[in-house]
Image (tube, rainbow, N blue to C red; front, side, top):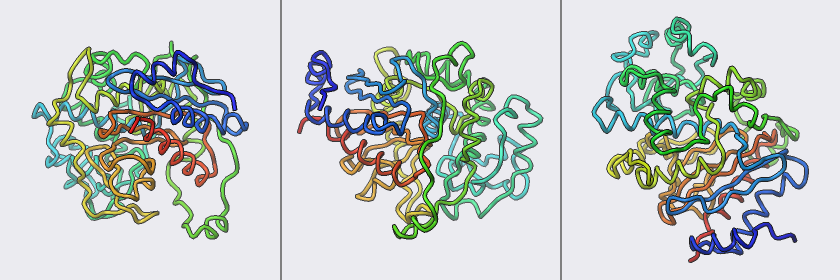
Length: 388
């Protein structure tokens, strides 16, 4: 087996107290599907003590390649809102319609701000076209037409994008800045995260890895043979995913799923979520971070696996031994937190070891079980890279 770590990378891993054999096992596993020809590219990175320990690229990925991180964007949008919470400019118990009157139609007038972050707001399937965002009349028209699927606060059901559009609106109303400008000027620029974008400039589109679909979808019988229900249909369709190859959609900065990043930049963002900032800026006091990571979803479970949802303020918390159903590895600590993205994007940080980890790929595997198993395997290896 060809060794993937260079001598220089191995020395750096040792400097950060990573186990070389475990890192090598991680790198080998992360590239397996690219080497087999299933995925066109992948990129992986680990950071610790505020620095990137290593980034490794596979297939067509290069050091500066940008991948759409899809729902991993939710952590960035949420962290932007934390700035408003800590300054007293926004509160979880506020009623959304009191801030955005256009939203308070069709019995949505009692939804709270906090329910938007925990996917308990009751409108998971509300449609929104990304290109409508920059037209206020169309934006508010969408908000006004949305209807409830169930009583807010009564259950947990993942809102792929709807609630985050509203959070972005709250950021604009309470900050006086556009959502994209707020994220850029209050988070990305102070932390000097130059390869992380929410709203991709046209000048950067050439280095994006195009989203593609690979493999065959599982049949209903195959799910049945595994004793699993067929995943419900959502707005995350192939056409919706592939639309993020269009520069005009990339530029919107969809708050629930339109960020672009290198693996290194995303791991550094999560280092900031561990400590509150970096050598360039401190944005969130530890009080804010600990409160943001507090589980707010109680005993609510997800629809498919019936496991605890473990939703904090825009983040997912690892929790008990069922953590792999929430997108973590089996070896993560209960305190690990993060938010993965469609297509198999893996992003988390673990306070127990101080590492943050990112795996990105532009190849979206239609086989959801294979994709999920890959994620658990890769995350499990990454979480155990620190020496005992």
